[in-house]
Image (tube, one colour):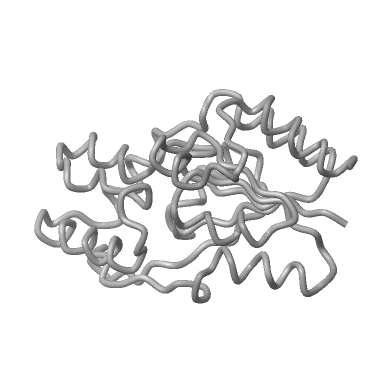
Length: 201
């Protein structure tokens, strides 16, 4: 019994923080897990910048409402879900993910939660569990699933390396050269075929 575990941002939808950085003209917010492997450090850095510029959840959600899935992402996901079970495992937050899940046809997503003050200021964030992607695939394996994982960033490596099969998708040259043993793909067709081959094995 296989279950496919996919990252969200960079794999199915554009990076939310990059879109928000472009919308607000704050280049510092372009920093993602591709640049900073320590997610805790990255989020604290982001929250400080939001506070500095007096930006809150409302402004980010306005940007998210304009984001569409990457071209071909919904079709890829639909085809994949016809073949097997799929879970999106993301380090994003439930307050960000809602509109994007609607555009993707409401797939299952495991993500985290923001702590938001009454005035809309994002004051903190709560991770579902430590090393959430790795921990989640290990938990799925403990209940009898073989996991097949794919993502684009440093924070996806744990789930990719712990899975029966794992693939980099639309990743950076630096990550691809650092992990040459992980097959890397650029198109949904390639990724779909690679997953199908593992399942049909």
